[in-house]
Amino acid sequence: MSLINDLQWRYATKKMNGQKVPQEKVDYILEATRLTASSSGLQPYKVLVVTNKELLEQIKVIANGQAQITDCSHLLIFASWDNYTTENISKVFANVNKERGLPEDNMSAYKDMLLNVYTPRAEELNHAHTARQAYIAVGTALAAAAEQKVDATPMEGFNAPALDELLNLKEKGLHSLVLLPLGYRDTENDWLANLKKVRTPQADFITELN
Image (cartoon, rainbow, N blue to C red; front, side, top):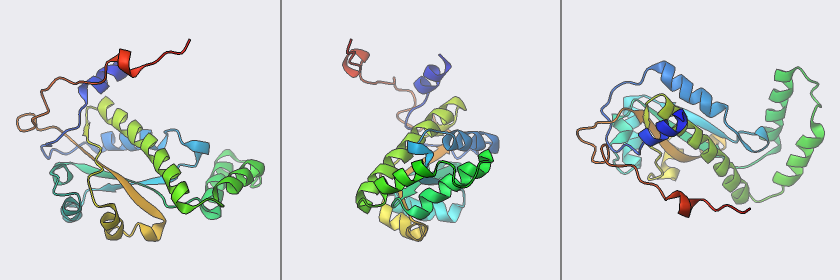
């Protein structure tokens, strides 16, 4: 039941106190995120970690002045691939074969199948798919943070094109999706901190088809 208790504890923290999160906890959250599931194991996204105060101030402006950006300890930025390409898919399979000590042409049939599915499709359709994969990782990061008793608030309220330009993400074939500040709640000044957690009742949320 520990995961349930952790998820009961977490909430979308609106006000953080600026306290530093120990690096080992940040590393744990990032490693859990790296190990999460993704379609065909492609992991079509990156996680950027921002601690530079000047850069955080610039991002805060892009994020409509939301205080968590500068009050947090570490800001995680989830950015997904703009598109599936022969290069980025092939790079994943090359790494898998290298790490497993297998021949370079191992799984070539599966790789070719993915290339035949993804590369002819419109970039917009592929980007929608890479974004969905990144959101799986965001969920894992939230759960890992809760386990470490680190507050984390997923945020979409920012100007993504402006952030992409600031961080030169387009040149890297990436597009920003979610900001995830990590830090600690300011219980005295966060109006949400002591309110009961409410979710859709199980009877309305779950449908069993027997």
